[in-house]
Amino acid sequence: MSTPETREQWQEMALTLTIQGQAFIQGRYQPAVSGKTFDCFSPIDGRLLAQVASCDQDDADLAVSVARQAFESGVWSRMAPAKRKQVLLKFAELVLEHRNELALLETLDMGKPINHALRGDIPATARAISWTAEAIDKVYDELAPTAHNQIGMITREPIGVVAAIVPWNFPLIMAAWKLAPALATGNSVILKPSEKSPLSALRLAALATEAGIPEGVFNVLPGYGHTVGKALALHMDVDCLVFTGSTGVAKQLMVYAGQSNMKRVWLEAGGKSPNIVFADAPDLDKAAAEAASAIAYNQGEVCTAGSRLLVEASIKDEFVSRVIAALKRWQPGHPLDPQTRCGAIVDHDQLQRILSYIDSGQQEGATLAQGGKQVLPETGGFYVEPTVFDNVHNEMKIAAEEIFGPVLSVISFNTPEEAVRIANDTIFGLAAAVWTSDINKAHKTAKALRAGSVWINHYDGGDMTAPFGGFKQSGNGRDKSLHAFDKYTELKATWIELA
Image (cartoon, rainbow, N blue to C red):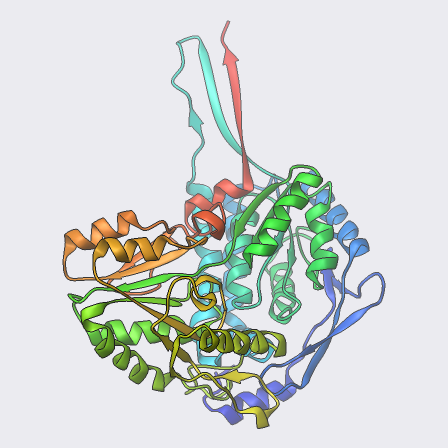
């Protein structure tokens, strides 16, 4: 199928799109046990997309039982790694074959620009699955350095049943970061997508089965966090819980794990990432363009968003002007228009949250330098201008709390030491960036920053070969790279004494 090239063509495709709203358990779609549903609306124009199964405790019990049976049967967990690799490679191929449909579901469901979904999210999802698949039969176990009459074997075994709770901002990418290594290492997976964006995950489940993943190994339960999410987190037969989302929910999931069976819990939580621009940055226009992208891409609904822009005082006014000029290319537009770079906010609640932070910034004395208003209300959708606050202090709410919207706080500094102090003065530690032509300053600053990812002279770099995760209250564990395998396996030491 050819890829639509215009807004009208995408809208025409949307009219014929089949949307699946039922849960996916044991290789087939089925309603929630209770029969309950919730309405799934598009943030583009507020129209109803589908009624989606509202899963709860009964559905969690069923899915966990099915996943456990599949795991214990060995149909996947004891399959040769090379064979699991071939299935997952086929899975990745099917994701790419259905790229138009999956991208359209992402855009309709959470409002991101169609070109970002099509050129970014879908290839990244397939890449996460295929890269991880290729690694399956290239990771070796170990032998300990023992005496001549002993053998110490160190092996990794799949942990069992994995529950993955993923967010609404990058529905498929975040799911792939979890399910790819979980499946690759032989586990059974239950995916709980956000109730704000469940549609692409439900479609993904059928593609997994088509690729050859056995029934019961990959299940999808749509529903609310306080119902089915809580049920999975407290379930005594879930061995591992992985999560991407807010720090507040991440903390509660740790409590649930302690209250239940001490299941392994791996969390990627919030961020308030500093983007540090020194006066000797090699290219201020590039730095400004990337500062704009860092706060406006995906409507600012990004955990690594460069929401705190730290600029050396001697260039602050000039640089902020460049950022504001760069943001003109990021004005909100219709998400199905391939020219749109900034789409719709995911729903009304999130829009109101963003607007409340904009009000807070003004009340606390920051200077509103750009944007600050809801736009395109006549569409019935949820759109807000990229917003820049100047003269911000780190104690202000807009500088301290994760907004998850296109709201940028500009803070000035005079020395590298002051920049590091401001950057680290946060409960978060997910990401940071440094712009300078001085290699010594770049390395010293990067080493001093308490963040899981640090980018030098660019923003938001990396690929599947590099681990991703945070320090402090941005979480624990790592997604991507071979380090992700650690989350889904248990180490076993088997000690043999020879006669």
